[in-house]
Image (cartoon, rainbow, N blue to C red; front, side, top):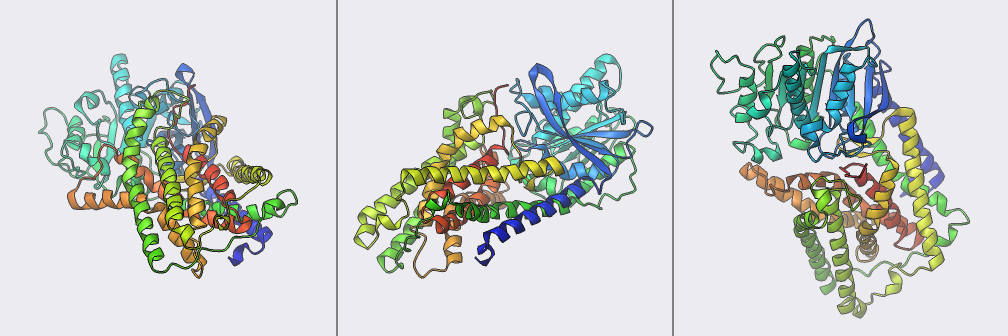
Length: 613
């Protein structure tokens, strides 16, 4: 590729693009310098710590205190995942704090296995801190609210009930003036709602994949018992009960704190927070219930630009790995790693072509059918993590099945490769010395060291960007974020297991998928499809069945299927990196070393970790 012909120029170009995009993202995040953004760490109960980002509008002062809104992301998400709503609310004059829920992002784990119910994932402690201290003296303590998506929405309604009970006991108004519950209706029960002394807004995706758990197994909120209970909880007992919800209509009275409104946007669950209409509805809600008129219309939104710059920087940062590797390979110390690139595999003809596509399809089917069994196996092998208990033994509940899947399919891939060679390849001109696997101990150690240096440079740049701009490489729920020291321990734990798959992928990409006479772009594209097709098929099955029946195919493990939206792009991109690094070194090893370190760190920092305090 001509872009990489001069690695120094291409590396410099990548750095320029990244810095410009991150500076632009920071400018948007601060609303053009009108909002001060800072990171905070709040010590909470039981030795726990809550990491958060504070968005303080310059207009919020002691003389002009502003409403306060706590933002709680959902399961597996960190505070950056909901930066869009924090940006839109803060640019309208609201003081906003977006938290890392306990066990996610940079917050500590929780001592409780029911953190949403008893702690709001840390939000309860934050509300108490804002209300009971004068440190945030620019906040109007009579107008404190909370919002969250998915599990964060559960935390919001649990907070309304928690502070409602407290208010009832003390005979005072609730500390939480209003809450907004997005993407979660399971706890909109009478046992919870009866204690709420706050205004409630609900937003639920019409095509939410988790709707099978609802009373009517539907995402339609017009007749949903969950939505009707919310609306009727604010209707005086003397009035007739509502039997059909009018979407977007306010029921009850804002001043009496029994206002209720239900929204039902035509979206899927994971994409709900990243939609203009859903964001508009939430902005309108808070401006109304908190009596705050910003003069900026709800449909005037800028967060999409931050997502665009984040996407560009995310892609560019990964592309940067290629010229970075080339530059380091030109040094005298690492020059020994560079070997002659072996010849490609012979063209596919006759039986070879049939066997190629048969094994291609077989590998995809094994990858597809083995994922859910690995999910179930992970629950048996990693009991503590699966039951939300603190543990150092593979504490990442959602990554554990992906790891088992990668190990299983990596081993199966090696088995298929060597069986193919034994019974067909060696009788048809295939030679092991053309695989790029022969390597000396010294070169092997230097390859590992080079991979570690590339990984370190990649994240050093990210830490510098985080320090100066308080942003990261991110698009929607996919992001590369900074990490705390404990994640290094998890990388050492998880990476060797994942490496089996990464190495197999490199071997396959640079032998069986590198065919004489085939264009390079098509070869890499086909390798990307082969590497990710099994997981893509799972998503296709899940959503085709959902479209046809109104219920997802895999119900119990539907969240694990949602996880694949972030995994599939990595799996597709992996062969590209393996091929580029192979062409640099003539060996299959540098690609998987670099990508395993980078990709597994990305996975590890974007999930829930039950690390002991």
